[in-house]
Image 1 (cartoon, rainbow, N blue to C red):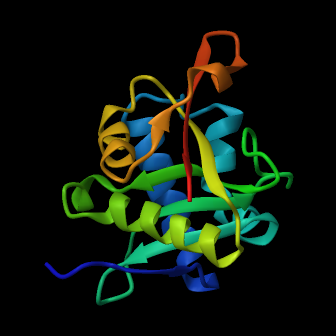
Image 2: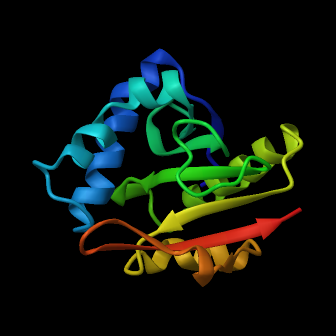
Image 3: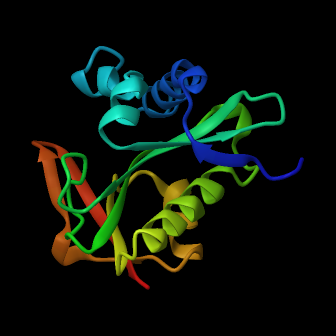
Length: 164
């Protein structure tokens, strides 16, 4: 398989991006299907409107995965400083895993941060998201425990960062 195409989401991608996001987070046990977070994952149109939704698509245009990108200091950035980019809701559909989709989405987010002349990136991840951690480690991100936080009781989040 050749590398997926990663680009800003188009209207035709939004339903697929929402489905992939819910499949990844609910299917992997990171959130409940009836939670407010699952609804936020499903609402790809909102993420595309209020932040930047990047999608990875195959040759036929099917959404394989997606990620929400936001510069620090904006509404969708939880932990990024104003000079950093942040990714949220990195999701790859089960059928596309192991094909470099997650890595391509993170690389596109790095490129977007550099395009905006940001000095680095920071983002949160659950301690149990080990497949994502392998991508982050391989791309030069490091754990930043001093910035770890909790989104809600029982929802501890690790922060990864990098500087350019």
